[in-house]
Image 1 (cartoon, rainbow, N blue to C red):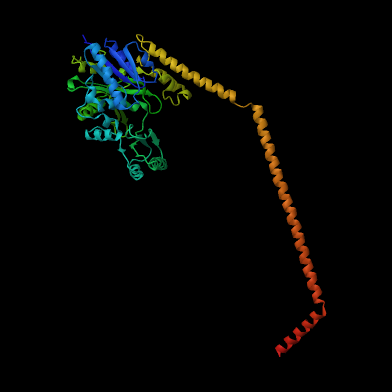
Image 2 (tube, rainbow, N blue to C red; image 1 turned 180 degrees about the horizontal axis):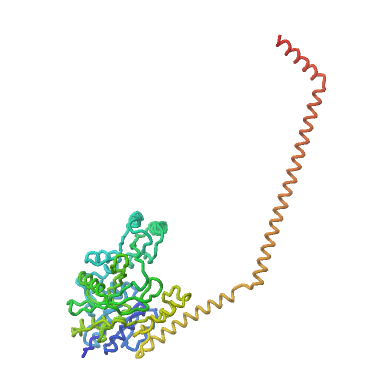
Length: 482
């Protein structure tokens, strides 16, 4: 029998994952409290498992957020006689909790690493160095301080490469971008350097492969290894080209589990974690892509044989209770409903075989993210948000149709423009013709002047003076000869 007297507080900034934590612990009878972002409405807010919900603006100065949480935690402690466990599914919140762990632990319980390592695990470059230090394969990577450094990495790795933000919470963030040419890379880096910002990017070799080469590992790491749990699985679909998993399946992979255990225990991490790997067919290695040192958004994919997931394992460990032995359920599938509308399905519409494969892939799903028979309201709220979004798209389409000019009007405007253009060309042609006539007149005047000059010269030849000059010149030439 599980003791559920210790409450849990969840900090949720976007509404995606808090509902899963509320359900997995709320079903056990754990009192659940939610701190949501002010001004951000989410379907997760409406779960029936929340004992109390409050909002707070986390964009305010950090000390104010700390003071608010301490006050909120004190009220929970008064109601239940014990500190609440503090959980989150957001990287920023995990950093915030670690940075203020000394004061927050006055009112909350939460896993604490041996040393401050969360910010380093979320920094792509520092995580790469930690993985190398502990013998976990990673893609080749560089953290250039200048465009020249980037050029050296490019010569070694070749194209394409992937550019990411090194520290996504430092200054201007670079979005994850596929770089296909040296010129493209240099233009991007030169632009950032010219703006006066630190580059704050990492360049990573591109590992070819589809989404099904991406492996996931979810785990909970306790102070003692015998109280830790590790689950592995594989992506089947994802949101957008580089987005989060929208369809995934549990599948054993001892290599991925071993890499995860070695890295997390090596850095002294404590708590829930989600790690992504990609299988590189070129060398047969599973290479770590990113580490999320907090509760993963897909943690409910990984439910053990006795309904133990990483959040329940964390709760049992922090409350000092016995953690039952559990095992992965191979073939268990989890689906994020957004998958139906937004998942990356390139080419599916043009290939009936691929459409059939896609339909087949969603069969056997054991759990959905938004829908739950015992907690249906979040799904209804999600549908409301979806329908509003679809309605806005439809209205925008109608507005574009209404504002689209009539075909006859378009043709009339085109004819008028053509007529005006033709008139302009005719005016230019008339100007050229007038210029030509003027040139002909000047040419005729010049010819007349030449004719007059020739007549004048002839008249001179006929004069007496000219005859005398001509005779004198002849006499002189004869004298010169003799």
